[in-house]
Image 1 (tube, rainbow, N blue to C red):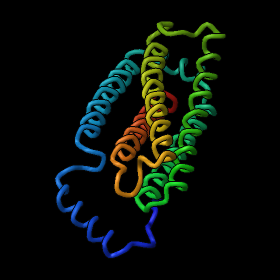
Image 2 (image 1 turned 120 degrees about the vertical axis):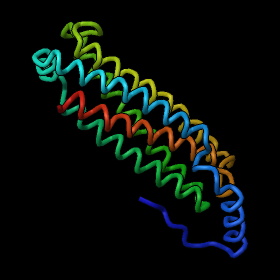
Image 3 (image 1 turned 90 degrees about the vertical axis):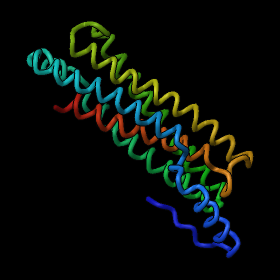
Length: 206
């Protein structure tokens, strides 16, 4: 969902046009964050391809492993990340419109979805450990913990970034004219969404 700004002065529009013209070569959030996204997607992509290849060689083991996964929790986490991405998009849109208060509320909402995701993932891991299913139990669960655990690390990093962005918005450091860091953090957050949307069907559904 895109937040539309309803009020712009002619000076703001002229300044925005000049800024966009002078920085047209740079992608939203800056080049570095997109380089990071590219490298992370390549890394996860390699892991997913390896997982699929192993699945062909250990079909029965992978089928049995999926039967032990908590499908409702995984689906709930998928909905949470999609909701969090929507909240973050609205937060950045509100900030670009100069509405810092509304932006802060949206960013906090995104943080809450990420925290709930983390709690549910912890519950999922705890269930596995209680039943003696740990890292290295077999090929399926080795990849299960590696891929979902690596994604969880990225989620925790994204939560820390958004917490700093929320503090910066609340203190007035980020606003309509200064929001590059928030934009970069939002891209990193959306990258976590994208990676989960790749990991989720491969591990839980296929």
